[in-house]
Length: 101
Length: 173
Image (cartoon, each protein chain N blue to C red):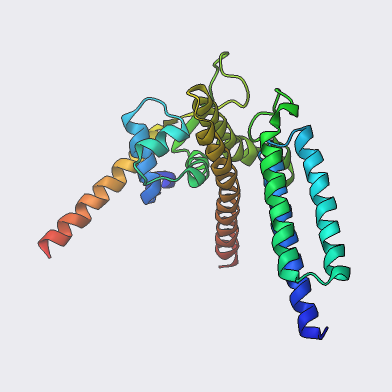
């Protein structure tokens, strides 16, 4: 239960948002879709951390036409979607407080 | 010849030799050096040696020797690049050196999930560029891929170090 309280950081939220809007994505696709918010050097470290937290799951692609190293396809988990929603809700509350003040 | 002059001569000679060797290293790195290139590189080493001997015994100003050795390097690089027919048509996939290096610097999980993905992305983009005939773009992707690889290594090590510090902090409280 306590795991659900972990909120993703800014870049993690960007990655989770992209994955929530798509079924499955490669890391490189996420970099291109993020419009500069995610870097090529950091994306896989970020995704590895998200996977260890249980927010993201991945599978190696099984394409017989693609030789060489298998690329991984990433998708968001239920826990990832919940944590992203919690972050967005927290942001909305903080923005509301700012407007009132 | 006073000490100052000796130091100046040796410094200039070292700089020009380093620059020439850097050019040859770049040729080797970009795999543009076929058999002709290797022969030219050997000629370059011989040329540098000859120039050094001339400088020591012939009274030629060291600036001339310094510029000369560098020019020999430039010409060698250019000749090696254009004498490409000697090279094999079969080349290793981009990043194959990194694949061999990775086991020595990263655990298995990081190799599969981080470094392997960086290399796979580089290969995909590299082959895409070659398919549309963008040779220079493919070379840029090769260089960029190697930079990204090492940045990913640093990033992974940084994140791991922070995690270790956090664990130590939590357990020590």
